Image (tube, rainbow, N blue to C red; front, side, top):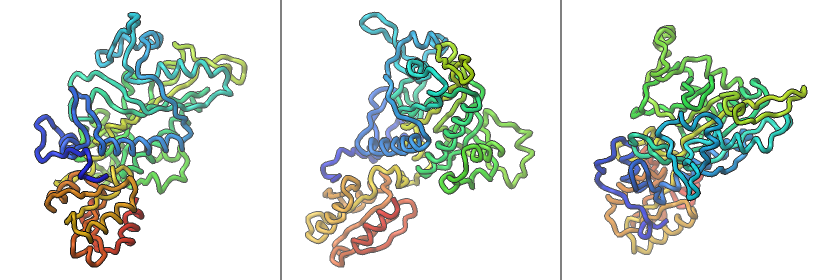
Length: 434
């Protein structure tokens, strides 16, 4: 992307309506624009980050054995009446009527729809287990939308749904998703802490919310220091039960579930108290939806049983803001390589100069579709400021003196480290970090 032609409307001043850091930086960096209360348009750079986050989520769901589908956003009110949730869900549900005066709703979640969908297929225990997921825009009519995409009314979400014959099988599915979530967040450069949670309107008696640590987090969390040392990617050879047992054998709680007595029993040197942001939530709720909606299968012994179910959500659009809350400095965003909109920003400090133009174009060609070339007729300070604000992992600075020697000055955004390298070595350094 050439910045001279890009739709990347950065702002020097912080809009007055932005209450939290991620909202301020997303607006200033030209990632999003508000269109109405709690609803945002995603601009090109923001859309690229959103797509990268969604792709990591998708890859880890596939790796865990879930299968991707796509369900409608508009659902029949009749489905929700059959589960008993239509009248109970509250004003967050956007209820509408179609031209035939049929009651419909804009889905805030999909337990009812996926249960009805799977029921048409599943007849025998041989058809289970299955796990189906999709990544879909949803709507919840928050009474007070705030904090940008952290608590918007429209949001992109991954929700998965598991179907098993027995409670034991359902818990195995739950553990597989538990491990998949740890891998997902680790690949985004995040330390996610699973904590026991209330099930709320979803239902059931087993639930964990995944909290990433950030100084600007909305919740206070308490945890055993051992949990910070766990590396979900390095420990990938552990089976799902061993992973979950490790986490659940050590204390971790939000302020809502905090047990002061259990906390006091932990040696003071092993306690960590911090702030965090919820980015995922998983539930095992058994027959809550399958029984009233008639999702039953023939068991191995000839009996008929209602399927055991779980659901597993990740706030994809919310994750973009959460990553910013966890990774920034006074100058702007610091994107992890895995989710950054572009691998590097190429800063041509003297557009029109044959040597700087030539070197910049060679570097730009080495990253087709994955680099920003700042070819604007702007002062150098403005180019540096925008590159820091938007948060590209690497900045490749090309000025007349360096170009005359055929070298590029590379700056690593996360550390501020700078090094001069020949073009080929600069390309290898950037690609090696991705």
